[in-house]
Amino acid sequence: MKKLEGKVAIVTGAARGIGAAIAKELASSGADVAICDLKAEWCDETVKALEALGVKSRGYGVNVAVSADVDACVKAVIADFGKIDILVNNAGITKDGLLVKMSDEAWDAVLDVNLKGTFLFTRAVAMPMMKNKAADGTQLGGSIINIASVVGIMGNAGQANYTASKGGVIALTKTTAKELGKRNVRCNAVAPGFIQSKMTDVLPDDVKKAYMDTIPLRRFGTVDDIAKAVCWLAGDDSAYVTGQVISVNGGMIG
Ligand code: NAI
Image (cartoon, rainbow, N blue to C red; front, side, top):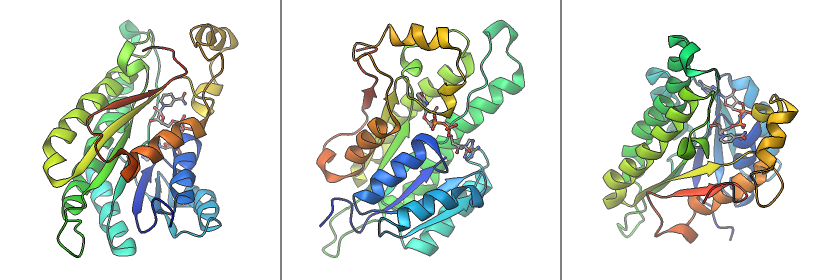
């Protein structure tokens, strides 16, 4: 039996990039996966890839920053899949700029998606996860994994909004773990370093080289490096791990 067989997962921002890789990794371990992104049709490719792995999957159009969207999405997932065991808060955006020139709009947009979105989905799944019980009454709970960032720990010039949002995600992770632990709902964060993806492809070569010089493993991370860490946190191999930040950054910072 695969490690996540019988489990139901939600992955936000899973139409592409790190989210799509996480969804595939969870499915490879046997989980059924609800794919969430801004438009349901953007999820089609990921859904097809998961179905080819033999699990149930379905796409949902949801803006993670909008409370009513998130509540409706969680309701629909429970109607379609019966329960929720795993939530991966992965949807995220950047709107970079120096602090002194940063507009209110750039600040609000990034905080709304990255931090408020993580809060809204966590709040929406908390009760359903706390109600997950085995036939003998054992509290099954669930696992919430928040995608933070190395820069949410160390800061980064030009990313006041993004670093603040990811630092907030880390604090929210620790509070969630403290509040929900008694019902066996765990909450951890994965803090990726520099990962090759659409988000980082746009950076100039000199910036990429400067990052590379700070990475002891001398390579950028792959989406699969992140997906494997998330998959470990999702399942029972990490049953006694909660409130932690797992850095997956090639040794960039300790
Ligand atoms: P990406 O830009 O390739 O994918 C993000 C996905 O989120 C997209 O499919 C997008 O449509 C979706 N999304 C954006 N706003 C949304 C909203 N309001 N509601 C629903 N979905 C929304 O980004 P990537 O690189 O895959 O990043 C995924 C996560 O990993 C993000 O939280 C990011 O901050 C984090 N991260 C990425 C790093 C990297 O090097 N790429 C490094 C550290 C963290």
